[in-house]
Length: 519
Image 1: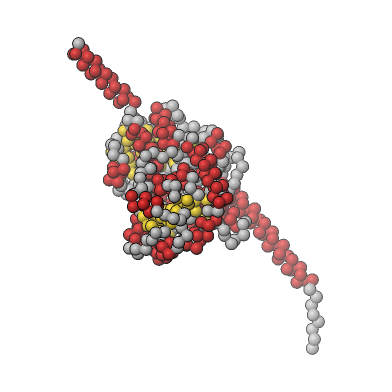
Image 2: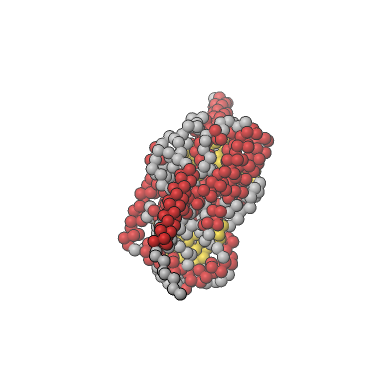
């Protein structure tokens, strides 16, 4: 009897092992190492690991040791330094848009170099059920197609893809609030940034994509879609399933987009326990003993301003007594600023704070942020009104959306005079309550979509073939063509006004009687 029972247990164990090995997926994720990318990626990875799947990572920097500390159960990690991480000067949006670094990051690294690197890994082992890649990694997607591996692209941020049959509102990649310039000039800012994005990102990316597709005969071809604008977003819209981890009301052209025939899966954001690590006892004590409205400031890991400006701001924070300010400084500045030893009962300088836990604290009233996409969704989840000071990339787009939806106010400069002015406005009882109510509605929609758990389900369905890529989604509107039409029409109007002005001057000159000559 005992032998028979043991035999039954052995059979059960074998059956369970076979079942798990059959259902468990082999997943590879390709992602940059910067926190803005690896933070949401790690949330999805944790969900997949909890479901028993095997995860390998391919990363574009020497960060495997860091990732192994963050994610203990990753099987393999392949790393290669493909481009240097360069801080972007936050007070120069135009310079950041025009920087040739964008071509290097999105086209040369994002298409060509990452294709070669992932190909190198896949030549040794391509036995994967599904690949997950960050939106900057078009080359990884091409390599997966070449090896017949289904792909899910994860993305946190705004999706600037208006549909052809929807009302179009031009939105570029610059945001200059409260400018002294006339309002009509803002259209030229938008047109300029869209056309420059086309020149330094979309056009080079399309060139590299076409070269790779032709060389390896990768089908279906992106070059056959007729879409050559708004890359990398439009590439994935046409060629991949996209998991968008964001509040949709703040990051989509409109909410009707969610009902359309697209490859975009909207999963919102719900934090897991890793997002909600406890604050240090020292910081907790500082907050509990604060007697003024607490303001938390964090401007991201690649934030950059001249050191003397930051030192001046630290001194101003230390001297003021209107607010209790906690500034989480990036590593490159923290040590130098900490040496000034200017902390008071109303100011504390910190580093590496669990941000969501911080802004969920009942004492924190306002969040000063660069409006990176992770910070945006955490601000919404915590229902914390924001002051935004954007730098580059998605930050100006996010800032514009937050301000237009009346959940944030813009900062025109990073000085205490400007910060204090906007804090007084945002903490007005009527303004503050309206912002909180709007944030609560946005959070309700965002958290109803399933978060990382739903994203993991979509990955599984793509791996098993239950979700396929739709190669004929609803048609996109071409904003680049519209920009050229805008410039042409305004050029015609300008020339007409100029012609009329010249004709008027000539007419006036001819109509003026000449004075008689005198001896």
